[in-house]
Length: 321
Image 1 (cartoon, helix red, strand yellow):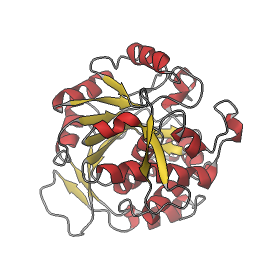
Image 2 (image 1 turned 90 degrees about the horizontal axis):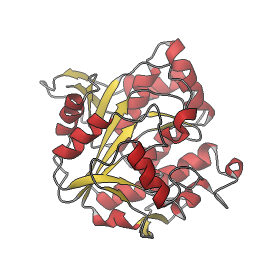
Image 3 (image 1 turned 120 degrees about the vertical axis):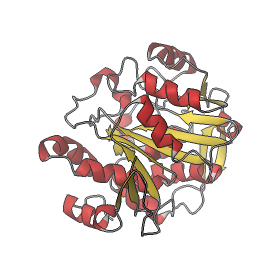
């Protein structure tokens, strides 16, 4: 799938045109052998807990909840009550993050901790995983990397719950679960420079764009996916979907798309495909800006390259809960 694939061709080749089966309440078995993506339109603490309950079986031991903490006072970050309810329902869990490469409110640990306080994430411990440095972990089958630098504390966790605000992204086109772990687990000093092809943290105009950047993100994410094996699950919250990431903070573009719901899966490619498919079903007035952002950045390459890297299935069964 090329990055500039048209909307019609994308939907025809995606799950909506192939293996998408809608189930209500999960009562009847799916006919296809495809991963399940659970969906609820209820963007509430109860809805998030219900979605998580369908995928939580492999989560054991010490659990990191990977959250994008966002820049200060960002208007679109996930509601604190949702995140708090999820964290409190998972034994031996805490939030995990890493510092940023770009200079902002999260580029140093001290500034990041103040941002965490301001944004209301201090209801539980927040582990800034690269606070004590970084470690290399393998990238299997990559054409750009053989290893990726991640926050050292990532190795302290037995399981990872990837809790993601699904939205647009300035470089990625869209930011879902894959971006959350690709950029969000890479450490600020080394890993993020590798992914962005950056010589320094200042001249962002020289950072990689388009398909090379998408592929670098995918390979970075694959290192984390392989590290945790079965003990990683994904939750995408399709709410306040600006074309801009929560990195933009108060500068994020106004939201034009309606809130859609929460998706949960144990399959990374399936949940990302399902999220994009749902967005692409929006009316044109709501879809236009997000579609332009995704396709102008060749964001659909995220999906095709994850499939090439055998990181999951583009076919799925959507189960409404």
